Image (cartoon, rainbow, N blue to C red; front, side, top):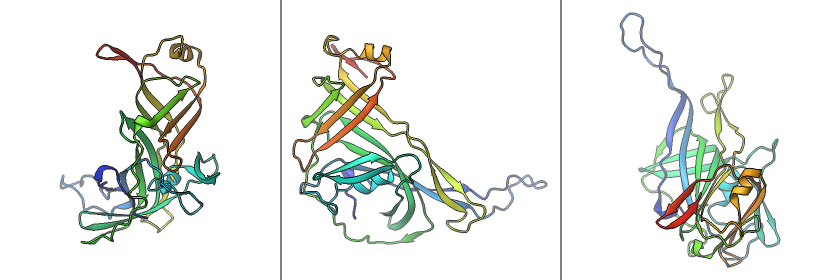
Length: 277
């Protein structure tokens, strides 16, 4: 499927070798020695996508547009449940879904395989949610391609829901004035060098790191009788956080975070208005 990127962003994928071929300084010439062929070629880039629904009835074959494959590549399993798609973190011992992509840029085509994603969600003000997927993948060669295939986007006419129609519930507290919301999954991927292999120039893919999810929310400081974040922080209390964006059943996203604990409170101000991060 063609991916409709956020705001016309065009990701540039960098090429990296685990072994660059450098052989350090020569013993006698005080110059550099001839390099070996580099090996362990990988590529890294960031794909940004607006969060939105399909605008039509979901099914096993009709998935949320644009984000679906990247959510799978970011370590989530997707299942169709009661007319909605539900994504849950993949448990330990289950491999993530790897992705195959083609990136068209600079008059070239870059083929990417065995790719995984680390996900961030950024919601500022009334703007739609922006998903950022940091991609790590394998590649072999860059080829000329002056004219990329015609782009056919899914649900291109469906507008993403803005955050004027969002709701946030923190452990039962649902009346916060919310300035921004950010989520980071904290996953990192480590290249797996394979001295005994020939595939991908001595590269066996990536090792999946652990999740270190974090949420940062900026709200106007509430009356403590309605919600006391200092008490939750001091006591190490756990709360459930639920966030919903959009009102249409076919263009709505809901996030559910269980067992959240406050790890830091930053007291700030916007003019005369006290805010908390």
